Image (cartoon, rainbow, N blue to C red):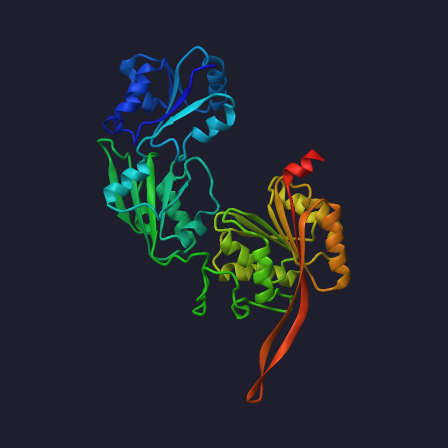
Length: 423
């Protein structure tokens, strides 16, 4: 059995924030792997050094070869559990024992400087990565912490936010935190946009107008955080729309999570798409529609509800999906319309190599039979069939009558990746 690999957090950067337990372990290691700036802190120990640059694959190979004969420490700035190399190392060093030693993150340090608690702050990173959900995250949270860097500087991030016309944002930027040349500045997105910052920066964005689950440019939006949007809140045309009560049950059958990736096939006006987009605040929703009026209505409703995590795929399923989604693998599918392609759509869905949930709404007996048999033939489990008959009151002079809405059948099923692979 080889040595442990130590993954060590050394705090925001200054030697003053490195705890004694960490220093003791590093002193006992023979090799230190880290960025050049961190290595400078331990030059006096005269250890063998490996510099982290664009060479992660080579460093993994080095660790695999040398861990049995040398004590190795991978040193990261801040805390290993917060946007660091820890997950990458765990994923690529199977069989090697890893011990993680925490440190003070720059995020914690900045919150302490601002005297604010951080138990309700959404944390994300644009340090050397893209995050298309950033706009939605900022809209939906009072405070958002963003690790900047790698080409995504605070001023560029503020330019992106300004282009989205999000009002009344307050931005705090912490630069070179814990170092002698530390700088903490606050201002509007316009003010921060006009400044320049070092690559070691973190932002805290406050949005006093945040709306949980997505917004809506309507004074009638009193239920922003629940499913079951009232029908009159959608922009509608001559394209069929899944009504409120049916939609609420259908979406509940999808068993959505915040990070679910949803594909709404035959999206119509986009009512199910919008419901899913509000629930999956950290995920993505793809609305598939071939009707030109429907496509326009979906786009207008996306704008109306201020959702940035929803995309429209224009075309007929399943043909368009092979090209449009590529390597993207949804884990939730809602089928509201098939244009006669039920079987081929289900066949495409089964190519997704992960656990999935499918919900299909039908209004004819033939479509119901086709959906059930299709799910059975493609190995879906836990198939449920629910017939929903809704009646709503209408005025009849001074009284009210109950008017029936066409019955809808909701068919749902799950397919488990492990069971399918074993076949």
